[in-house]
Length: 266
Image 1 (cartoon, helix red, strand yellow):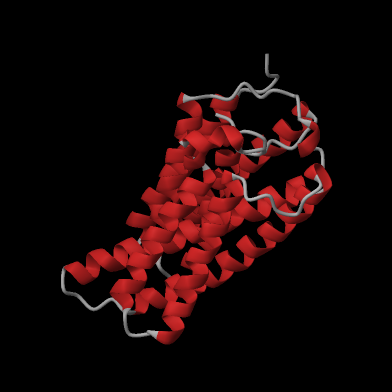
Image 2 (image 1 turned 135 degrees about the vertical axis):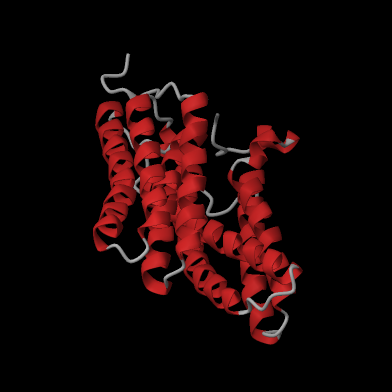
């Protein structure tokens, strides 16, 4: 039996994010309500971070082994990115989208709870495991934010409105996201060399990870050579994010997953 209650932390985070987003919507120019909105939204992240830290201490291993555990980190990073984007560019809508997606992810963990097994297979007992997973999940959160921007851009363009400035925000998020993704690939290669004796083995997980990297690199090249084609660029981001989702957890449902040495379990 767990000495801490995951449900309590999850519900607290959901409530704090929901209250924070609601306060942002009604705050207007009222400074006190805005401060409460900031405090509530960030407190949701802090609660989840405390839970992750306690879980790490209780399990005596990094809580990054299963798909549910990676969802925990993703739900923690995405609101941070949404909040930072809001503070930097004053796009309040992405703060709400990021918070909503984070709520969905922790809710999934609530519906399908992990068993939080203490065991950690030898291949995961590497100094490269933690930086690889953290950098990768942070990259995924950044690239998810870029996908949100792309989808909203496509919707606005479909309505015939001018929203070309959105692609610049998507570009900035992709630049950061691809940088972290590249770093994650390098950490993963070093981890693979230590754990399996090879930097790269082209197993299903690694193949889809490489396709994800190529997809976002292709987007950057497309934007450089075709800066005026914003609709096409937004579609590229949407497709690249689908590939990312397959690389993250979709590969677990492919027949080839049985041959992968490091897919996340449910």
